[in-house]
Length: 223
Image 1: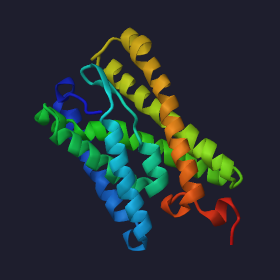
Image 2: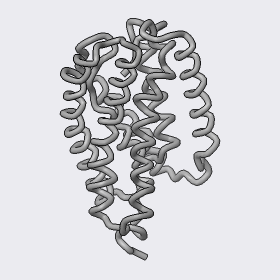
Image 3: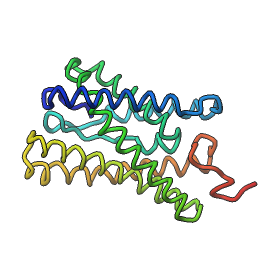
Image 4: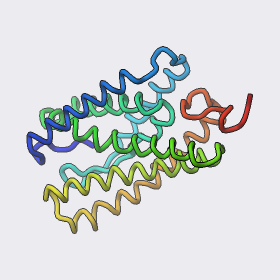
């Protein structure tokens, strides 16, 4: 999840850190803080902690390559894209602070944030907006496309972007990335999709007020 700073040039690290700070500032300004209900606030914090816990189960195979659940789609559907970005940033900062390689982790935070948070969240939010515009507002479309499919796709986007970056910078060989790393991301897409889809399915049935992207009046045509 945290990329080794020594893999990258100082200009790339500085640029990505500046981009990350700008995006976080944008998220803070555009989140509708005054309209948040206590239920939405609690669910946002609870599932941010849940994602942090899930990050503790990871497998590292090489420097800069580790596999774990992302949780980006889950946070996006529950809290919206702006709060999801803030959550993912907070989790990355916490992970960096407790990393044995603190200086390296902090230097590459911006780049890690762009790959681990921004791209998956943008994928999820883009797919949500696309289905809301182009497809009927249907409960099953929301669950299977915006939860299951979006979560799996966000994992693939994360993995492919990381492999492309490593290949372009010649950090790892293309053969190694294509044959040994990328297939694992395809496998990881399945548990990401299943856990996200199952969690969202349960929440919209038993506690729809905790999922900001789901409205009974819109998907179930309730008054």
